[in-house]
Image (cartoon, rainbow, N blue to C red; front, side, top):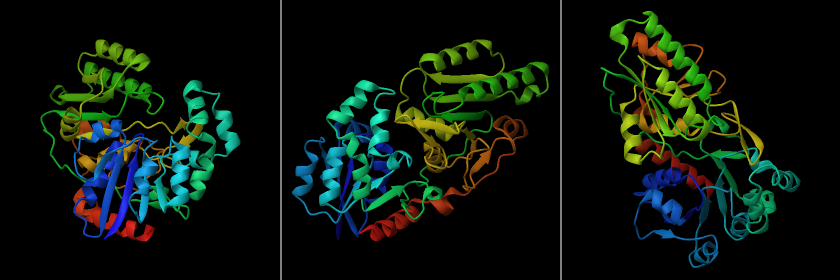
Length: 356
């Protein structure tokens, strides 16, 4: 049986959790998990092969056991530690921002003084930020979680599987917008304008009264300017029901609303920034809403400029969530056919076999 170490010290606890669940019953791979306290609290799993660790401890932990492969879940911090690991172990890492992985030392240095200067200085002085290019160069494999992002340089790691397939209550049409309410990552100004347009259609009778059983859920924490937008919107609405959250949404609440959704609305911005460098959704960065749609078995609306071959994605412009709502004609997709737990587990094991 091949021995693997999976390390996650920073973010993306949900990806680590998916990996754990898929490999739990593997007869071919034995995996030890090394998580920071923050990640461990999010996953909430206590098993003999799950260890709490810190960046200062992980090297010694790895030296005490022979691993055929080390997988790093996120390389956004602790570059000096990951550089040491990549030099002494066969190591692969999941890449969440493809452009970031190709930055030079000079580009990284310039970025330090653009935003979050105190935090980025810490990354430079204490965590070896300028060794990031060396880390990516030493890694045996660079992994991506969206197959459309894979190429000769980046290998696809299948992680997302369909876990829920609950049918939504047809009496109330529920549109869920999953994710933190941030204009930087999603275009909430456009969402608000479309909701206002729908309110006018209700008010003028363009939409029949019996079709007014609609609710829109902003399923993520809202604060700052975005929270003010939502409060103002809520006060202006008479016919459209909406709900938003001012605190981090508990996992149980998130699951309940996602299962209740008739359709997901994902107003992804064409571009975002990571470390003050441009990342393009669908080309250099995957949207987490892809994983949401697969996990909960929901059709999802994405902007028409989001490049994707996923059959469960509908693009705005061809139609929109409100047209689907008024016509009650939503397409359905058999998520179990392509994304069943068993199928993805087999694909993941095949991929791991190829990394050894």
